[in-house]
Image (cartoon, rainbow, N blue to C red; front, top):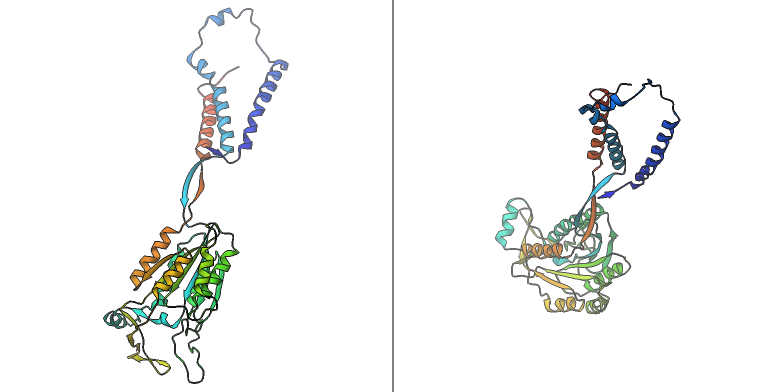
Length: 365
């Protein structure tokens, strides 16, 4: 039992003062009385039931006042609830290179999507949707994002404003690799040029942000589908440096290699434009060579965790393991107010005492 305002218990210190004052007044007061020569006859008469019961009235009043003081002290009961996912600092590193336009499904599956007037989700869209669900479930965690392709840059720093994080994720525009004759740059207002992939630079930027943070736990979540071919900093050097840090300040590194299976397809291009048929994208087999062994070696150097996901289902399943495993447990004391039953008991005793003294146990002078 916990009392939110225990200072009210000091009222009990006034009890002996009040009791002494009342006795002093009784001694000083002159009460009108009828003079009797002797009380022997009255003392011989046994006290009745109501007379004996009336002796309890002061005790009832004292109990009521004591309960009132307890109610003012606000008794509370304590429950402990374990809350998960509290206090982590998480930097997301999202690959936005052109290969993230690929889908990892058969042509029949692609056709079934298009028959519903919907383009199938590519690797990038699957990653964004999965990250959004991840963010919604991370109560109390600070989240930041680094996007990378031909270069890497911080999209937003660590923040608890998850609503803004979700808006920023929705605002990302993947380079669809369409090019005009006038300039060799994306023409769909892409967030970042998707010609190449800078994994090492992205990993470095994420680590530097976490290095300055004071979070109870730190994570880097890297999602990519290709090899590093644009970084100024070699991925192995960055990963080795992260892995050399002590366990306390060293962030956990979770790397997800997405796609690359035999089902991979990518939107076809004719010249600099994306090919379409009946208003929908046309897809061709995408035989990409991803050096999975090299990425695994990088993750091992960082003392991280590696997941290979060749299609959307495998990626979502692998990512769910991250959600379940990386949580900080924090016990939070939840207190429930219990003053109301005590207050009602106090009022009930007072009402009982007043009614009894005014009716059944009324005293006559």
